[in-house]
Image (cartoon, rainbow, N blue to C red; front, side):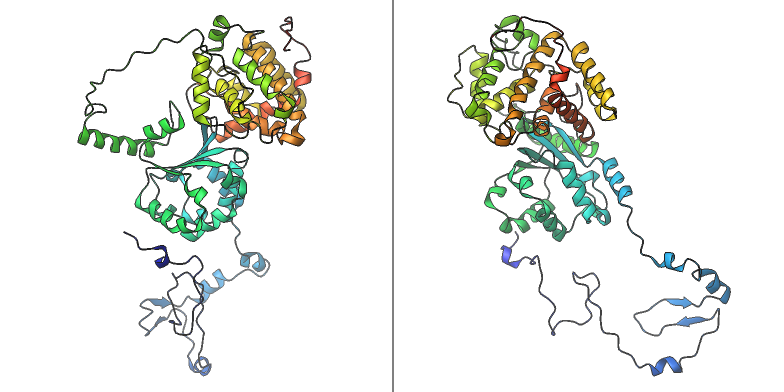
Length: 489
């Protein structure tokens, strides 16, 4: 077991005193250049070697022989007179090439939202670059820019440690400097830090940092030993991870099953799966929009719980709540409300916390059997960044929403967008701009059918939602369905 923290090497070691070895190892932490002392008379007494001759160093610290180059070789390797300044310049790292390599590796990805609607960022150790590129300001800047749009709201970080190579292990000093580079949003808005498949190295790193970070941050760390455990914690049905992580997880799970038997055997279960419960007709969470419309009193295709949430969140003293939709409500209570609503019980939101009601609305959208903007439109929406001109964007967005969305999806999406417009009108108070709302709602309005979203895909999705929020008057100037509007509309 490791000793107390006082015995660890300090982050900033003291300067060398006069009692230390004046010629320390070059691998030590400091940059020390020994004094160079010699008698210059030796230079005048040393004979000039003949070209092609061999010099042998008698000093035991130099075991190699050095061959003196010939005159022709010296001339061939001499710096040319007309460009010697260019040749002497230090070679600067190609920042663009390094960033392209980072992006190609995909060691940091957006993998969806958890059961509370909080975005999940994954970092894969098996894809990290080598230490020479890892311990650099470019790497830190790349991480920050990849995450900055998510960390303005509550978010989850999952670090997959399995597969880290020895030449990719960062120095502790680098980790500490990186931690200090992160601004308050990164630390404050991080809700959980899952470390998947932790090793001794990870536990030693944590032991090193534990005394110098806040108690609040410590409470966010969760060690997770399997992917199934992580999926259950995050509320995910599927989790796509790199093959080395998946293979390691399968290996340790197979080992566990061989030692203890199949799950449920020890407790008396026989492996029979419970029958799927019948969905009550009153259900509004976890079903399709068509199911709700067919079984509930929906005015203009708006589910009752959506209208109830929007009515409450539109109240003057509620709509101005700072960070509305940015913060998550109490998950246990949201789960209780969800169960009551699905059972057909009446719920009153007047006395509920604003963030609980806001989270309830996001939960409804996230749990639809198919995303509100449909699987069919996913590929088109993720191409938004390629629509360069305003004319292209206006035409394509209108076509997608007016012509390709099913009628009930169109009506509900329009209703949500109009409500978010009211939120934006009070941005001076609630601090929620169109960009902030797009980041929050993007992953809850559209997602792929089979695989997880990547960082490359979430950016155009958020940009698409941002564009719709800013141009809703133009997009919905013509009401294609021409329905009779109710009192709520």
